[in-house]
Length: 276
Image (cartoon, rainbow, N blue to C red; front, side, top):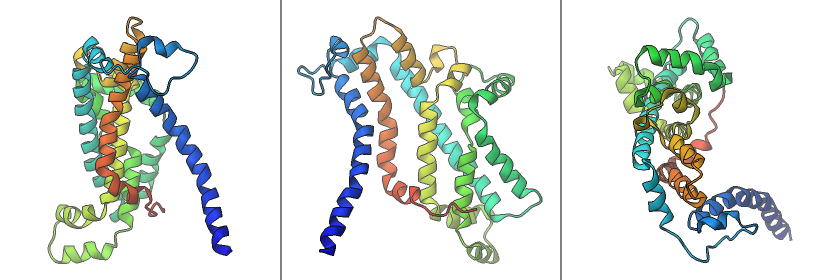
């Protein structure tokens, strides 16, 4: 009897989770099926979840209306650079804050975390002036430069590295290992879940960036995918179903990266080391 009640309670507990899954998945299903519909189907009062006639030509037609292969390449370059930059710089900064003690280290951590409270709109103008001084306006490095390190990434890596016993590092130093070798051989192998989370978040955030690329880039050769998608949507001559096709293609790189890192992500998102 108790087992039956426990089983029923477990199923009841899954109902809210199932409801949330439906809420989040339905818009994605609608976007994918709409991308295969005829243009006039977008304006029907009733939703046709499964197209009566499939139109896969929406994809090549949409890609041919603008320089989306170029926009896609620009986004891949920028997002990959941002991901690698965050992995390198956030790990180095997190390692220093976690395992070294120096005057003002706590104050430095507070200052870094305080930047999380500043919206992009506040730092947009001073960041643009720095990029302009460097001569990086209308360039891919101008888009990626300010995104190469993130305060949350530094905090995430610091908290994870804090869990690694300092005795391991001291033993390696006694054996004559340098700091970079300790970082590469001891620290990084134990930080794979955190590195996977950081890589996915950095790539996704950079891939979705719209306001900062819009401020830095005005030339079509350096536009990223979100900028191209918005321009495509503003052109009233383009069928909305083709816009859905472009939106579906925009989700593929982040989805593939998630599949590649899913094993490490499961343990990374469930880590319990975020303690001060």
